[in-house]
Length: 618
Ligand code: ADP
Ligand code: MG
Image 1 (tube, protein in one colour):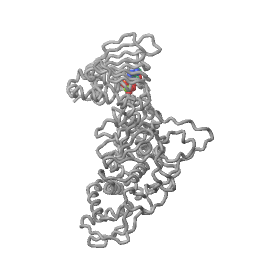
Image 2 (image 1 turned 30 degrees about the horizontal axis):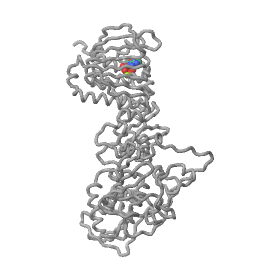
Image 3 (image 1 turned 60 degrees about the vertical axis):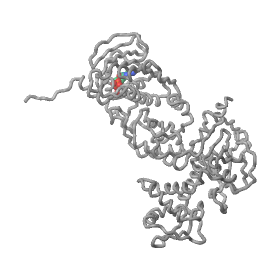
């Protein structure tokens, strides 16, 4: 028998490659847009018709191509971006495989017009299913225009697999967003059926996000910034309260390339844990810059998956960076902390010493306890966390420094009788307007920049939750010993469960010892609990743990802290007294994450004065 192995003709090989590279109009859009970025364009126009099925046209003002290159670019493995195998280890361009244009030209009718800045005249090429039809000189602008007509005209099976125009358009918009987000300095215009869909001027990242998603996003974003030897991370995350149930606003870019990574997604997602409901997904637009030598971008034909050399460390850095930003900026920009826009501090005179305001508070005070606990005073650490600092700026009671008077502090009136039982000790009176309870459920107060409406139940859950967590971490366990220990009886199931959780109960200040046969003696309970019916309380906590504590990978201490916070919180519908109202406000704003309950529900709603001005047309 004669030999049977043959090389495939180029047209067939290209069509096979196209199967990987160009699955749908959106993939062609991606490749063409990426080529414009690699060509150094600063202004890009995308035109599509019938969701790219009949026309995709991309025009750029990039470097253009010579007459020969214009022909060469349609050859398989023809690229200007790498020359030798080593170059693969240090890729700084988006393309490098040299197969996009060859693939596209094998399954569509393509017209290319291109001119380099240094050339007088440009080149026009017509190619159809890999077959060159025409090449001629043409007078055109500097840069390149690629028009892709009738995609899959010669592969009907592929054409039939395409989805509805609506869905294909959605995919194209997705690709467009990816390129537009990572290149905010480039201006883009996107026409669909002769109508402008997006017009994006050159901008910074925040402005680009706003131009893509709408102006209300300016209130939703928190900056992330972290520079390390391994990776530089920058970008924005959405505030927890705006997390959505649907995917779509999760963007990672590595060295200017959109990438997908379930692993890194988990790093961000975990940073939002406890802040958003379990079924919500945080938004993020995060950019990672790494040494190109430490990544492999050549593991997938569409180049959206890449291998990082040290992905575990990147995971840890990303997780920490996001967590830090949430702590630092959560909520704040909706008030006065959008430094870019509204913080207008007078310059500090040279040599002027700057001191932190100091407030003394009692961290163990529970505003809803009937008995007043003996109070130990506590001073905020000299370097408060940024979130505390931020809120303190709004709530500080005494300007620490004459300079501070230049900064607008809340109007200070109505000293609240010097009563220290609201949690403030050390002779610092609470010189802030008292809050007001409405409908026995909400607490209203004001700040320099707006009115805050607090949900008393969610807010108190947050306060207790952070206290329980802090107690769990502290060395000395803050239990109150019972003069007369109570005995409680648990059924065998609950007794077993209690044993499993015993350490975590102890961490929070419980001391409950097994007396045998289902009897337990309660020697100590946490500070924040009244020694009423401990049995009912323990039983109901155990009941909740049965459902919430059994999922794999749960942090048991967190689950217990959350469960107890929910059980013990002041409920909506309960009237609270003035000092309790004020303590609730103060304690909430001393929390690390004041804006959300441990379940991720909002604790407060802020109406800025700007909004009021707009509403009242002032
Ligand atoms: P790759 O981008 O992987 O190199 P492509 O098939 O996408 O492969 O493009 C082949 C070559 O054609 C590129 O390397 C580049 O030199 C040239 N090219 C493609 N598009 C443009 C463009 N818009 N402007 C200038 N040169 C381009
Ligand atoms: Mg390319």
